[in-house]
Length: 343
Image 1 (cartoon, helix red, strand yellow):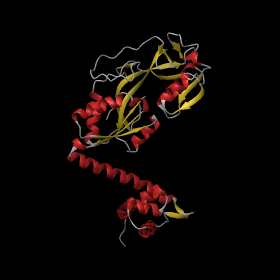
Image 2 (image 1 turned 90 degrees about the vertical axis):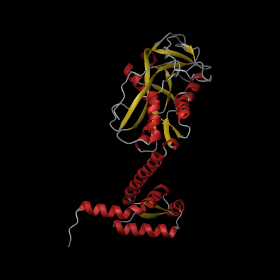
Image 3 (image 1 turned 135 degrees about the vertical axis):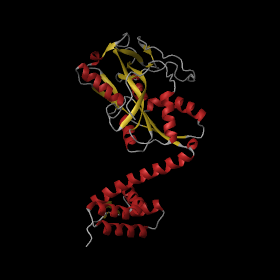
Image 4 (image 1 turned 135 degrees about the horizontal axis):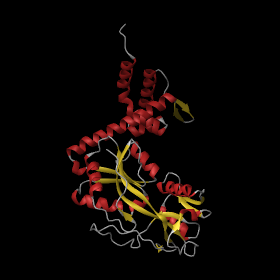
């Protein structure tokens, strides 16, 4: 009898499982043989037979009946998860091959925080498409935590986040700008007339914040911790403009990015000098006064990608454009002060 090493046996089993990657991934996604078959465009009996053959091949059941559907066994979940990752890698490779042939018609999957969709993302895309009109963009918005997770899992190519994930060996990035954070309070609040306010003076105040997972929430929590007190959270939201609206309604105060009083005006196209940070309380939007913090507080906005992985030509071109483009983001911004991370 010819001896076969465990490694060789694993390779042989993987080769025999490979043709069924799509079925395993579809069953894992839908939890139902019929829906998986419909998704793949094959008859349901064919899908059931293939699953039975795969179970015999592996030597353990992959699915078990569960009500009117099925549930994956632990073995099935392991193979389904691996199949999804393998198909994702194949899809990325196929896309890269296609775009290598014609990079001018590629697609960039771009993730960013909600607030960055106001000026940063539209400005960068507009300038990039002036020279690359055939490149398409798919845009995803969410919390910092969700965007970084999607980046690691390969669902998006690049993300714009703040603060940057410094010290993460799996990610590389380049800072683009530092953005000032201020205290937003309703008119008539005891701090509304102050020229600046220290973080310690927020002890006892009801705070309106973003939910956990958002970078601004972590900054707020760290600011309070450094000042020696536990924040009193009155409301949590998923979008900074909602937080700003709650402040305007008198429901609390919030640490938010400084707004541009000229918001709504057409963006400038010339890369003029960075505007200096203001040090006076400023009516930002109706019902909200912005008071600078002392010492001034900034967060770094940057573009990030997975370290060591090849970006598609279109994504690489847009990343290089974002890193090289002169940014004119308005009041409250300054050149970045943190270094980038190696690719």
